[in-house]
Image (cartoon, rainbow, N blue to C red):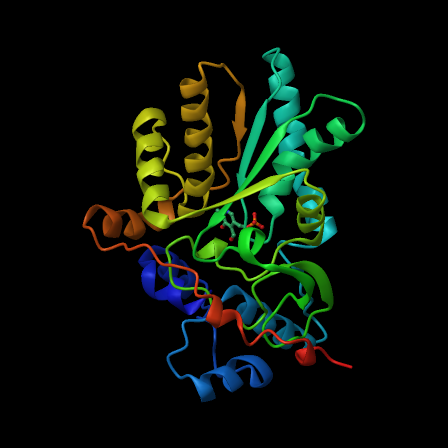
Length: 292
Ligand SMILES: Cc1ncc(COP(=O)(O)O)c(C=O)c1O
């Protein structure tokens, strides 16, 4: 678990302690965690570093394998069960989306809901507007560079062509920890380049406001990550109202917030602040970092 989330989220931390798991970065991994902590003892960690540490630990043991949870093609394909299921449910309701919204970090839940509909569109079906929502403080799709980069900070993973803020970029500690990732799935990046999807970045306060509005209407508390999709869907609904048009908006509520109630407590007590993306922080990205 990434250290900044470990410190921010007491119930997730309790879960990790129950499972006897530690926060990342940690001293146990020589090439990734220890090297980073030697330079920066209070490093908050990042998903890129956590991946490096997991790969490094797995590589040391014959009985351990590492499977990436997002980004790669096969993960996105498995997630398309979400969109396939949504398609079947909408068919039962005799409906079809005009707009699809999902939040994005590595891209898996977004691709999961969007790709089946995009596939149908590319095979001659109805055109759907597809909107990826990312945190403004970690905006790989909207402000990243489309280039070959590593999926992890210590460069133990293969290079992939994707939108990236740089594999050594450490996103600021906003509460949607699952969206604090420097890169984007190559397939999602590719369709963004083809103009098949749109992308937008939102700040955390407006996302929490949307999440609270949703919770009070639906009785479901979304995860801070999912609040980005909720905000995107609400904005689309407002657009419909302003244009006087009725549209079917499908969005992915990709997780509940039951382990993230500290984030809501911080939001209600005014402790959460918006954070900007600092382009200068991405400067360590250099072609010469790539292995020959
Ligand atoms: C609830 C939730 N939603 C979304 C994400 C983002 O990942 P992806 O873009 O791969 O769906 C995460 C990542 O941990 C998450 O926990």
